[in-house]
Image (cartoon, rainbow, N blue to C red):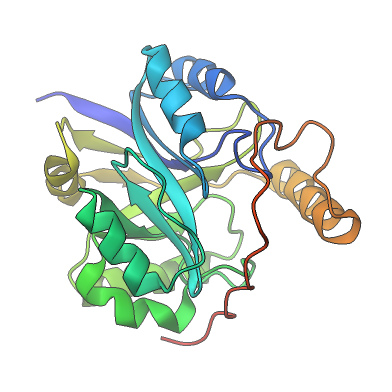
Length: 242
């Protein structure tokens, strides 16, 4: 049976904190032997649609949705999910559109937008949990996410959370082939996970980008070239215990 080298949770410059175009992401995927990539830009799907239209790599159209309670990933989307709504409502909207609901970096204290304790209320709606995040240098937080997924019988996946040009397959899953959202979730249950980290230089660049955005109100030069200007959202609640 064919197994796909699949990267979940990647960004293009349709996200304000990414500096690579959709076609650059495709080129990186080809160069790193990636068969399938789930592109999940912040509150946007146009980058994923553009990469899918290129046709050289299998692309799952997704979105990292900024909910009122923290970030959610929606996969297998064809239209934008509105941000800023409660997480449970957002999850229901994703499912109503035939998508899957994933919880990225749920317990990362380095992300202001992690779900934290809000993940408990999402249990009836979650399809998978990110049990390792390549951006997070604190492995015990990933271990906590893995314990949470096991305790509640949810599939785990490793999330690259890759934003920068040339980065992608720091972590990936080898999984059986799939045709749609339902078979993807089944394949994820049979996946072999290969966690990894993006490294110090990557983290330093992302910290600089974050500081530039927060202090100067604009991204670093070269970042977010295709990002839409959207109204500011209320800050997500800080993570708490779960």
